[in-house]
Length: 521
Image (tube, rainbow, N blue to C red):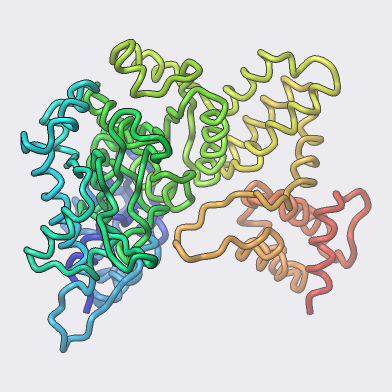
């Protein structure tokens, strides 16, 4: 059986539109989706999927329920099999227990340790004897008690064994604290001590609202050599690449606003909440991951990036934007003054000023073109070559065929390079190792383009059987292929159904793919 908390986690992370849309041809209707009901015959659609609530309902026959109910009713799956099916699609690892066991989550002790730590840190923050420096810091940053309590902010005094001893008094053992990352063991001295000391503490919640880790920020400048942030290490319940700070609080606001604000750190998320922006999230001390993109895509198809305005912030912005595009999420860039971040803007210029910056967000490709124009990169052939090199990663990342054509036309217009030449250049660089694609399952490895599953398999079938060429030609077009080399091979196969060798003039990278397909027995 599957523990209840696991079922809740799968339900929270499930993309009900994707699951049902794989079975029923859904059409967008406002914020919801509709189709003819799969449970009874009808000509006028009365079957609605409501992603904001995570359920479906048919006004014709009355069938309704969540994503699990749909699969049990439509496919005849057992409840457990339905949960497993959705978990696989959502990248959630299921931990089953046997019926002879209690049915409790095998990691319950880790969640309980984190819950205790959260309460411990919060109590110390509001204790006048210990929390003075931390509450003064929060007041200085404009964070009131209501906001601090909403985010569960706490304080870890500069003591070596405060949490360790308090947890011991409550029956939480040292090994559990080590496993969840709250305590560190010194192999040299053979003793253990608290990981978080002298820091403001930010609990990190899963989408289902359970504390899975913590981030600790040093107060003020801190001692020399002290890192600004200390974060929980990965643990059986915490995988930082699959979680976004603030999403458990912001998900409803993101759905309502149809946009998420992505910032760099904990304090940015909290400061934005104080300023009235309740739809902000942040990656957890690392670059944005494909799992995080897939998670956000469940709630919105647009992300405004508000990273720092310095060179490093811009680099992170464009890297994240390309990954978002690869996940069919539209990234827009908020341009902040150099050296500023959302937190400093709120405190130096106010919430209205930050709103002005956010309202001025522009499409990522437009922002890249804007920056290149500012540096005269479209004047002279050498500069235009450099400009194309800087724009290609964004073109390569786009999966939406319509947006891709729009982008190629924009780049063609500003560089005076023909669209077909840009297509050829994309094909030439398509095998670059940095090509990004969204992978929903955490442990799935990203295959290099020649081993890309569905596209390559279809082309292989087309090279072996003319019937497959006809079938594919009736249902698909070149734009359905993400990899531009596969797109070129698809065109060649449609043009010559008896193709047994590479056609003249084919881009070399695409020709090599075709050679391998033709040689495959």
